[in-house]
Image (tube, rainbow, N blue to C red; front, side, top):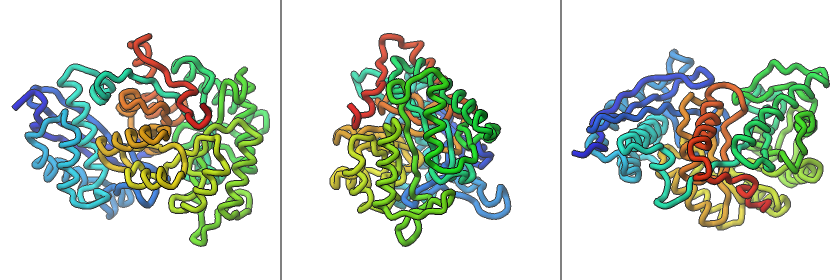
Length: 430
């Protein structure tokens, strides 16, 4: 046995930022090192995601994860004991083979990911290196990502006060990560001031720490964000761009029409694309996420042509799945992929999606979930995997700031030994 050999697993039922149960795990190694991870959970989830295992019954409204926890300390522990924690591909393959299903539904993707991440952290600890270095390709320069920061939320993140899920600030003009976060905080404060000026309450905070105002239309969120940027003393478009998470899967009907319930309208895919094209013409929109629904490939092809010149980001569309991403590449659909490790269940597969995207010229955005934890490992993955962009929520709520704070520390620690992606991460605009 070596110092990085797995000797035991501990697991427990923890709580995420929405008070919903999730799986916590500690992987222990022969040399005495250990790694701990608590996995997140999404509110707006695609049907093609890896499947969490929930208990059902009365506890936590059926959302308990005791069965998943038991799988970690039982079957999974028996299978991975004796494996090398630094062999991420071998460890993750072992757990996928053990589960035996495509979506990890037997053991639970929440159980498998907890072990996958905790093992990576344990392996880095045993080697005496930070996680971002442990997961990086040999010789690769670490890269601080351009942040997308949540300012205004609707959809599944804010009680559907508006239909579109998130409006985010992208500090494209900032020269460092530290400056980017400071600018984003100023924009959030400016947006709150603008809402007060309009006589709207600002006490409502959405799942990811953004503002959750009751607005008359989806488009009015763009007006507030532009005004908030100006109140912050920054220039819309030059200093700060706008990213929109449309999350269209959340409001598509079975007949393929898109229902904007807050406005009493329903649109065809082509009409929705034209609506978004109007937004792009009138506002400094640099990124559109899930502009069409997860299985509306025809609509996505239309949108990819009509909205060219913007980052077109697939979340529910690609669900961090190599096969779905490859279909998008083959068909010229979208030009960027959102990477969420819990969508696919293992770090190794998520890493393969980043590599495949970069090989095809697609941009990558590493993303947290609406139900997050106070862990900060996502920040290290963004740096080590050189994703170029990261999206973890707003500049408040500790499960969000934990990731920003980790990136701020990495920047302070490495100084001129680390690069900052900045605007160049938005390849569609470069």
